[in-house]
Image (tube, rainbow, N blue to C red; front, side, top):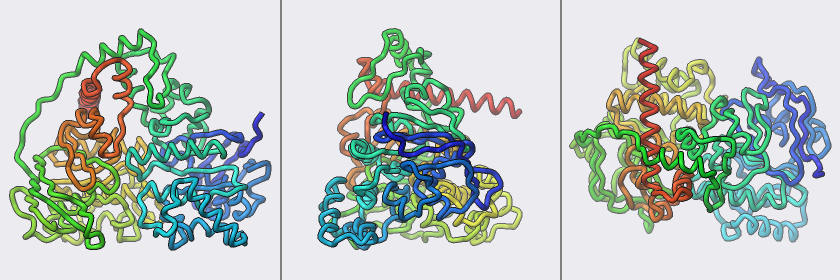
Length: 579
């Protein structure tokens, strides 16, 4: 039998600043060579569990501990954080916070230098570690200049050690495009052949792109489920714990399939389905839900021959001759790989940067004559990195800040701030210092700040980054209400294909600064050429369709229409209950 690497026994932990414990009665063993997914919503305790293993608790985060947490047979609390660093390597969600060197090579060498390793051996080991993660040609690169996926690989190279038996990946998919996420999971899968792996994530379907041995589901600091993926998928625990179900599983439920034999996500192959379930799925996909009537509205944004080049990269334009139109009340997803030009487009639409060439019209007016403040009264922009937006120390002050600059009345500031904070589930934290918030909570603060302004157009840059499904659903339900009931125009810049499917009717696809596709989301995500060029990935719905011998486009469209019909029914029922 494999030896235990991590052993929790009736373990509980309460942070010093909190009244209630974050972890309660945890009993869990991770064995040598296992690949284990720790799954849970924000606040479930999954990152706290990891920090108890790697020594950040109690050395960096003080609190009250009871029970036992052993790493390789020794109590973690009896080891120094330096000793634990040789046995446990951690790749943080925010990799920028992990870098200490001015180059990739220097950063990878940091731990070796602290261990007084012989220089000749260290130089060899640095190259070996970088080669193992595919970063050997970036030894001289500045870590902060790398892409999200490259940063992850560089951070991983820095924690690889001959003595390291366990590697922890904290939210490895948070900032990656779909293809980058697949590459990250591929890398983790390859590394797992020589290490024990713990993955901390809430994106179940994306992690299951490659097999895991076990999924440990946490909810409110307790273990709800501990077993194989198939066992968890058919248990019904995902919905109860605020975790998004895989798309193919939702389709099977809509089709009233038997869930006794749920197939795993195939590695590039086809789903193996019983004949009865295959037939039910075919009937479901062929019986497409009615489409809501599409009404053509006036243009609110028009872009003509738009190009932009950053001064630091004159040879590589960020956008190249882009032309498009967005109509009032539309919900549009802007998708593509990292560096494709999506965020640059958002900055141009908001006037943060100005075009190198081309023209942007807002409600027929050329915005070149408008100030950023004037544009901001019509267009709200939530940036991808919340740290780049937040300027105040207290949550409430941050949400009120723009309202006070615009000299709203005290009563109006109070109303808008209260509604925005409650919408983003932050009202109970309104007097908290911003520095005490998690990355995902900071993201919600920036969304609340923009919602408080009630702009006509809202641009959300990666709105689901750092958000679990429950928080994402709450925010996007409100955003959807603004779009459907109040006619707000929504532009969603995202890597999240689930978000594009559920919240947008149209997708603008970018690759290398060019607009390569513009059309219905179901059509885009069924086009293999577009998916390949934009570094997207085929959804499990497309794989399911191919397994049934059906059109991927038809099946995705049928699923979207059914999903929206279900949502409309839930909204009507909720409205009737309130009435």
